[in-house]
Image 1 (cartoon, one colour):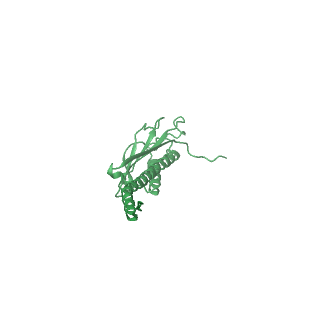
Image 2: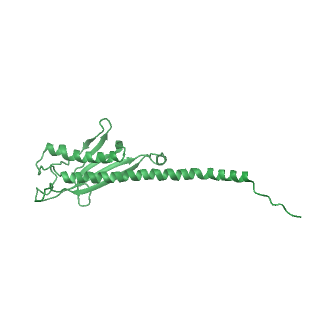
Image 3: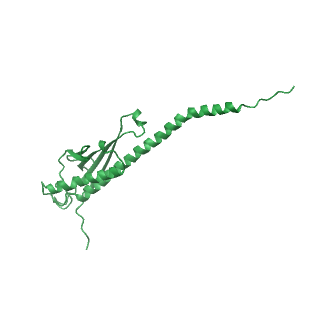
Length: 196
């Protein structure tokens, strides 16, 4: 007598495939959301790095605004740090960074790049959509650009702090936000002069 072999039921296989897909779909979705979230966080970190470099570059080029150490000098104070802050703001807004949790430090740096002087601290004011100076007395007119004070150059440091908040909600399950900090230090140079 011959045994009959039974063909697998196609309906059962379809049901099994659907069940397997239903089990794997949340895992795949979580991985995709995690990739998106960390990509956006990485993008914000790159924006902070670029903004701090641009701010330090502006601070190094403006120096003491040509005041040659004559302090107090309202012109230098009205031009130098506001120019640095404006550059950082433009850079961050262009990158889509939420300004409400951004803080800016401007300081004279030591050889290791750490603050060696008083720190000018700025924080975002939601009402005026500008950065307000909170504290600090690192005056622009007293910064050495090599043209006074025995040819001494100061290093200017700019630090941008930001708390990244979750865009997808995934990071919010684990933490209230991801603190990020970027710092750049550059030597203050003398005012540019055209060569003959």
